[in-house]
Image (cartoon, rainbow, N blue to C red; front, side, top):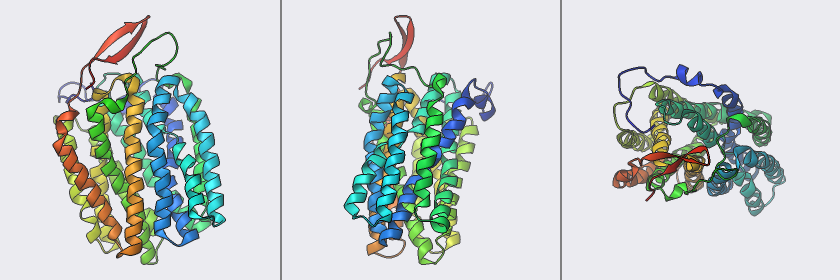
Length: 424
């Protein structure tokens, strides 16, 4: 299983071996294109609404509605993908998301009341295509119990963070130099193009477990105790993303350099990406549960120092360190899913974690926006500190629930399936 400790002997599973997996590139390239909009959505909403209302509180609230909506609907989307196929979920999803995003843009430019923006934000968030979890599920289908699963988890984290390097930079550049609405318009267009292209790769999508001749017991990923612990852990990670997005935007505007927002956030994401590359290349001899505890403690420590930064260089350095601490926690969390959750519920499990990040981000942008409006400049940086410290406490208290469960193989009507032996 992916959660076992890799030994230092024998062939080391690396990125080259992973990328030579047959058929991998047929879903990796369109998946990368379809991921880009996710990194642009929140910052595009914040910049557009702040421009039209003049309030970071209103901007954070609008972005929060989108994030909460996505967090609530993402697991349901993942469950539908597990049962009916990714293509059946993606095609209507990208169409609804693109239309909703353009509607939100038109309302914001028309200075519609905040409640109208909230109404438009609901379907925009609910229909965000869950490309990352779907790609991870495709890796799981191809690699099964291969030690390459840890490398795949690292590779996916690096890919996610690469989008978070380019996405905010692109969104900020479009919103500040072209038009405040350009970020959301581009996001909607990329979602439509990338999502449909990814959906067209039917041959690599995981086996559909809800239809056909095979009969598989469906167990909700949320019933697995370890998944619930990981959800809290990922909520704390989301608080870092959301708190930094609002606080960096407020900081760069306060010094008269709004264009630096994308650079600073890109530095944070670059640290995440670089540490993700290293994390995936290392042959770990430490159990993943312990790696998660150590990595998360480092994240809480560095995130707690953000509010003390009062210069661009210091903030960039701290952001780089925070980013470097996030990747190991994300990678280890996603890797643990392989050993905690049966194959037929993994897309749902991945979407619970992705949704937790979005929910944490949504709460963070709301609270950080209010703190920036009502307190001193930089008060929003208190949010990442609070979120990670609380999540770390939960992780320490409930770490025993991350012990992996065995899976067995059975055959139902001639089709092999992985089903849970026990889920408590």
